[in-house]
Image (tube, rainbow, N blue to C red; front, side, top):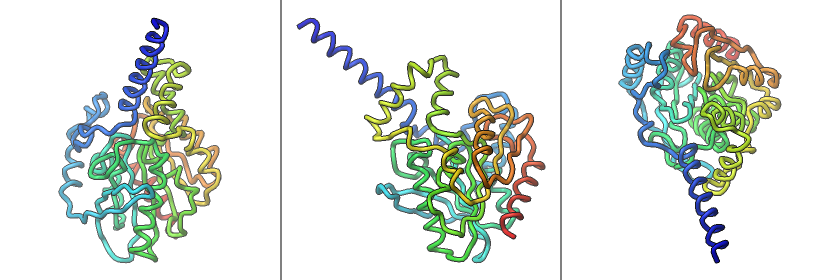
Amino acid sequence: MIFLIIILLILITMISFGLYIFKEAFYRNPKDDDIHNIPDGEAYQKSKEYFIELIDKFNNLPYENVYIKTYDGKKLHGRYYHCSDDAPIDICFHGYRGTLVRDFCGGAKICFECKHNVLVVDQRAHGFSEGKTISFGIRERYDCVEWVKYIVNRFPNNKILLYGVSMGGATILMASNLNLPKNVVGIVADSPFSSPEKIIRKVLDDRGFPNRIFYPFIYISALIFGGLNLKHGSAIESVKNTNIPILLIHGKKDTFVPCSMSKDIKKAAKTCYDLALFENAEHGISYIADEKTYTKIVKDFIKSVLK
C-alpha cells in the first residue's frame, strides 16, 4: 500500500510539473497584449522612447478590423490598412507573446512608405484572436495559409509579401512550402528560429535547465495538454522545398534567437535572396539599431521581387 501511494504521489507530481511547464511555455498570457510592454534588456530600454513613439503613431492610424476562421475553428483577428486597390499587400506576423502593433511599428512604416496595403494579424492565442495554446509556428503556419487565402479572395490579382518577426518569421518560413498561391512573391523573416525544438532547447539551457533532462518534459507536456507534437515543424526543412524568394534579417547580438539559426536557414534555402546581419542589434530590433540600412535592404528586396 505504501509503495502504491508513493507511486501515485510521483505520478501526481510529474503531471503537475508537466502542466506547469505547459502553461509557462505554451499558454497565452493576457499581460503580453500590452502594446507598450517593452522588454527589459538594456538595448530595448535605451530605445524605449522611440519605441513608444513608433507604437503610438502606428496604433493611431485608421484601419479595418478583419477576421478569418482557421482549419481548426479558431476565429483570428487582423488589422487591415488600405492604400489602393491594385497595390501589393504585406501580411505581417508578430513574435512569441508579442503584439501586432509593437512588433511591426517599424516594419509597417516601411510598408506604408512603399505604398503597400498592409494586413497585420494577431497570431492565435494573442491579442483579439482566439486560442489558448501558442504552438511556435506549428499550427500558426496553417493560419498563415488561411490569411493568404483571405487576401487572394478579396484581391485576386494583387501580389503578396509575407513579413514575420521572431516566431512570426519562423511561421512564414514554415508556411513557405504549403502550396501558397503565385500571388506570394516574397518572404521577409526577421530573427526567425530554425525549429520549435531547437529554440526551446536553447532557452532551457539559457535558464539553467539542461535541455537533455528537461526537454522531454516539455515535449510530453505539449503532447498531452496541447495535442502538439514539437517535431512537426521546421523552418529549415520547409525552405528546402519552396520557390519563394526569402530575405533573412538577424542581429549579431541576438541572445534569444542566435543568428546562427538564420545562417542554418540560409544554407538550406535554395531561394535565399540575402541574409542581412546587423552588427549591434539584439533580438528583433535590427530596425531600431540601424533604421536607414534596414529600410534600404527591405526596399531593395521588395523591388527585386515585384519586377
